[in-house]
Length: 150
Length: 150
Length: 150
Length: 150
Image (cartoon, rainbow over all chains, first blue to last red; front, top):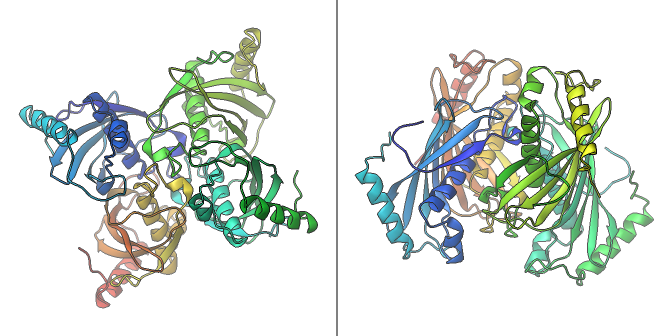
């Protein structure tokens, strides 16, 4: 397993639907797997994203980056490791590593930056208790020294 | 061009994202292409589906069928031919033929049945002016003898 | 849990990517979830589909049907129950039930029919040991009376 | 229409399948639309990507970035504007702007970096005539001053 991000993982089984004519997983799926990881990260930390939207807080992606290291193939089992990278009053950035389960081979890594929005899609200051919750998590990660990007 | 359904067509360029490890378009995309055809069909007949939803009328799929005749490949140009097949007080069924542009080779054909629903997802009797509009279209198709399924 | 198909299940967490503007899972994803179920079915019975392709046997979908019973939403946990329905010398048909984990609510059910093909996409007679393996499974299902479609 | 990249455009009609529960297009689709734009860019410049793969040259994505400026919605008509940004012996980088057709509103912009690979997925020096063809295009773009990123 990858060092540096011991955090929660979503486990992904690569679907045939996700492969392309090169015989490997199509690159855009990495962003979908990031999302699956983010969902499990929030749940594991105690505040499922479903609850955010119920409370009227939405987190659309404003920027996404991904670096592809090794192709994933049909039926591969992948772990999506997630951590918080940055938190501002209006945005939050997550960091991801996708590793192949078993041998820990790095498949891809990247970041997504999200804005805090209300029901109308308007950018707003991160409301409580969500902001405080994120602050606490990012504090823990820094203390454990697990935020190691680059 | 395919005989039988002279109706409006959506033109689709097969994306790399839509291919799979067999080197052909993944089968579930046919349902997405049906939707693209349905959208152009409604627009060409004068009542874009976007207007339906603005008026509070939603058309979720309650049944879908597809028969695959010939694989489509990356960069193929496809025409999605659409017609109305059946209309009831609570449901409407569309019929589709996907043909390869140029040589008219039949790629797939199928049907989708939709329920009329309100904003809360509750099945309702098809409201006017939508029901009358659909009735008029299905009447025209029958007169022209273009509904030839099987 | 749904009666009738006690068979192996793939567990699916509905992704945000799989939802649409109606706030529910987009219908074409059911075919993708069927595929995920089929993959786990073959693995659980001892012959992972990955092995089929390594041996030069491909199973493209020649017909797909789905009946939608209840919408699935973001973050719902779903079970895809799978069984063999029909086996012929050139084709095999799988049957699926997608139920919501926990309360067993039926989300969708359907069938996919597959042709046996070689590396060039040519339809061929189902080769051994694959045909015998499928025959054995379908025999077991009938004995247990679990094939209950309709 | 957006200034700066007068280059070829793929025209995209946003599909219902591409929307999500926020009522807007799901962010990962931007990478798919980039791909559609890249396909039309190569075709318009005289060397369709389909020809590259026939010649044994593959261009997997090694890095992707996207900045989201304004949400796209179901049935929006979008133009994907594409240009070459960088060319090296082993990699080539494309730049994209997605604008809403009609009012030219910027939806998203980003870059994808691709490695030149052989049939086995091994990174290779960009072979001729592909390298020379890319060099010529990037030279034209610079002369016209159309490469304006940032």
